[in-house]
Image (cartoon, rainbow, N blue to C red; front, side):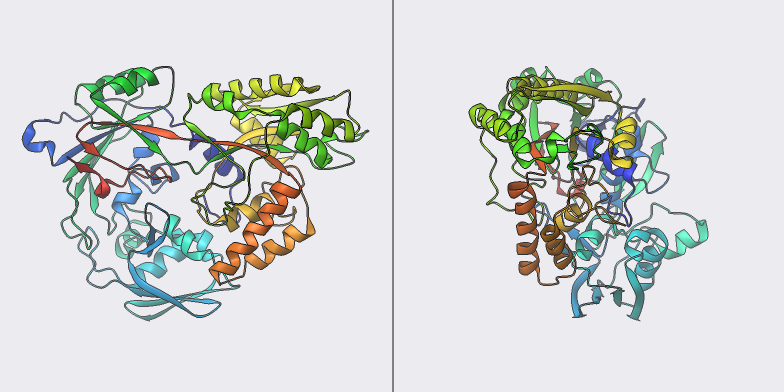
Length: 517
């Protein structure tokens, strides 16, 4: 969701949806699963037909179809290091220029040759978020291209790795729309809308030949039906939303439970305005005081939150971003759970009798959010902070908290689809102004944090840039406690015992990395 400027509804909706695979779907093609096909055909069960919609490049199918059909200039490996893809190498002739040397001999699925013209076309027409940062795209020859930016853009490779897919120029120009013809290891062969989509190995693929010849993404709406299909061998992988069946599933000798490393973090955010705040327009706003924010932090015991709604499949977090994301600082630690310290901080802030406050929570359709919000209200009551839960849908939350910034306190799960922490920094902790602080719902503002962020946004030396981001995050999270980090949820996927599958933190189903054993 790296856009310029970002789409607010998509962002906050996807933060939550990335933690909960949705629902959809119908039947499947009748596929023979005899032993001769076992090493050639993979069946993946998904809980939403939207993620296998094959008619266009939609953000939903970036987790299933797109990573297998398309390539970009660069890609992420499983640890989110930038690796070559359609570009074999790149350099910076100056701070405003990225020069890419393209892979030769690459074919699209229709047999067309891949050249620099496809790169220019794809970025200008179908990746306008990236194109908006560019002053020019210059083709030096068929296999050398320069992207020239208005300002130094150190995060460009990360953006290209996530959303910079390359389309076949000839096909898309003729059709007048995006077409699922790429240079990736698999090509689209069959589909039924709302039911299944089948991909077949592309033998002209430029990279290592995948083991699996055919993969079908099958939509199954009912989770019990999904589990039955996995146990009976009808499917090989199954999406799964954690629930009370987890102990039974773990004990099933025919099922392997694989965990996605988390990119998303749950946090509590605050209105930081001293006067004219949303909840206290005629009086002092408690959460404008850092001592109150620290008191709330230290009054929350995250262990029952992790062991309750998430059955233990979550990790405590100390900051906005997880270790996979550039800008993460291993030196930032959680404040300890300490009720005595919490009460003392409230006394020092002048709230020895506590206070009342409303917390906005996305609970409609997300029972674990409702449970966690309720547990937090119970914990804060023990130090005299009386919290009223405001139960909202995603749309209501987006309108109230994101667009209008009418909130005193809120709980949300947010993540990042860019592993460059500069993007998170600019949107969440920079002061609110045009294109900055877009999701800074509490009007947090610190001039030093802004200065560090502005420097990091144009620093092309990665080590120096990392230090700038880490220091800014430290000030925001440690000195100012502008939010309370809670935990990151581990998502699960279930596989048959003969499947070798290592889930990626970005949730992408990269079929060429899956093996039958």
